[in-house]
Length: 557
Image (cartoon, rainbow, N blue to C red; front, side, top):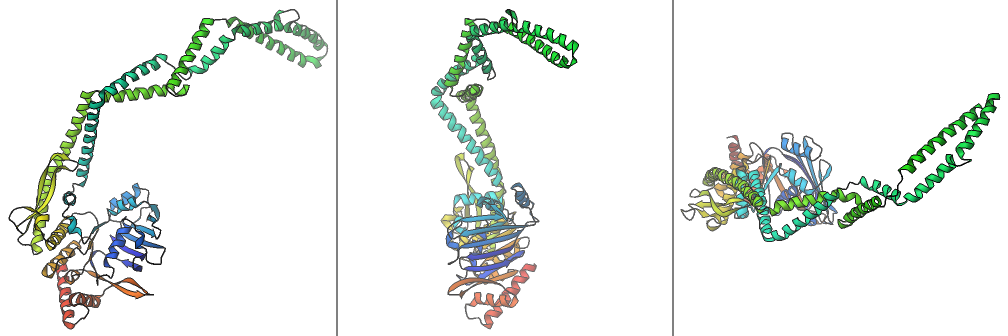
């Protein structure tokens, strides 16, 4: 739940630091004092759109910091861990809006995106604005409200996903049917290209060997001539190196026999003789292997031309030919799937069946929860002085279905102006819509998982005994969660466990908003003001005490 809210330089709020508790808290004050500004500030901390106009006049930035107790909220703690934010028992959401229009967001001191604070905010607070009854006339709002009441939001999202998949495949299938001839031509061309590369059977490791063999075959005559001349100089002609080294070794042997000083030199000379013999042997083998083979040279060069030609054709380096072959095979497989109309048609039918199964399940679940919602809202309407009215969730079939299922839920009433089920937009007045909207919000939020509910003047158009009933409803909702309500009705405020007064005063040539926690005496005077205006009499004070006593009594029931 919300435990602290700090506001700086926001509209007409200079600086406020508020602490909140569990239960029903009323925020009251004269019109224009800034009651709804507090709700707007909290909405900004929860990810609402930032507008530079909210920065107080003469200031560089506005800053909102909202602290929540999340120790009993495992889903929030899991979200923080999954998104790499510090996990603590308290969650701090901070939003900074600069006069330039730039906005920054933070979660537990770490920089965050607006979408991230919106996401975590969905676990924390539900805000019901003063114009919620206007939204009640929109078809999508009615559908979402019903799905939220029945816990069907995830199923509705699955239906939408299945619809999107079915529509995508159906569109692709139609395009394939229209352009199948072009795809078949492309497939045939790919088949030939794949065959050409497969027949070449080229591996990048082959290229260095081809280059070496080509050089050897192209210069075979010169290589043979140089090898023979080297052999002659080493060991085959008269006075060759081998013969001279042998004579030198014989003479050095005679010296070493008489003088040990030359023993090491003799050893080195004999080593040179051995190495010379190895070189000569290698040369003979090399010369014997060399052959002038024009046919093999032509084969190697043709192989090189083929590889180079394929690389140019597919616009890749030589080493990229295997990957080019893989890409062609992938595209060929894709076209094979797309040009196989029978197979693709099966995929379309399977996608439709998945959509149909999910949508049919959604329809069944909506029908079940519609009955419960209708009964619950009808009961609340009786409490809100609409005893003749009956709330009914009807369904308008949608031909062939849509992303939202096979039906459009439609909120209707009977008994107000007709005994038939008539859509709200055609029968309910503004005041009646306001009360029906409040009844819906109270019923739907009972099943909500969030710990904090905020109602911003949702009691507009209500008065008298109905207002007291509204206060009781909000007090009932505050028994197991935190409820904050901005209200101008004394009957509603009197049912609250705590009350804050919002006021406006002049400070340094400008008006600023302030908020005060009211003790028992303060509540009496504020309720009296709400009852009788600026002049507070003993009569209005007594009436205020009676309202507060009645509110306290209702909370104890």
